[in-house]
Length: 147
Image (cartoon, rainbow, N blue to C red):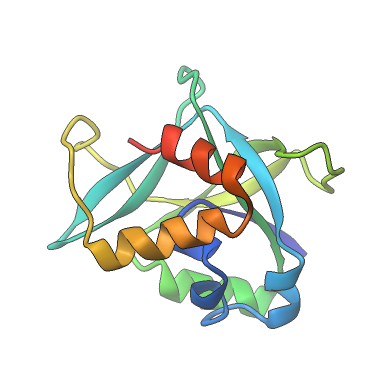
């Protein structure tokens, strides 16, 4: 199985089910990725979440750990067009033992980290409903770690 750190729309179970099996989505584990910075970024004409990794960053972001098979990974690669995979360190969000210390995260190189972009209300709600489905504390951490 391949560990994937999901930090945006994939936290929403309905959205995740478009590309992942029900079994995979139901086994999602809340985690924290370290040395990452989550922010709204512009890709072409759309605004989506992006997360960058830098060992000099002292910022974290919560998200979901999915353990995917090769076919699901291929589905996600098609879905996350324009992003590439990098490995990031993760720890458990709620002290549940997790099977990996690192997970792959979709990221896109960005030079717009200092520009504040506003997503569509539909996308923002999709992500926030996903974060809220893991509890109010998880949702609040999402809000506090999204720039």
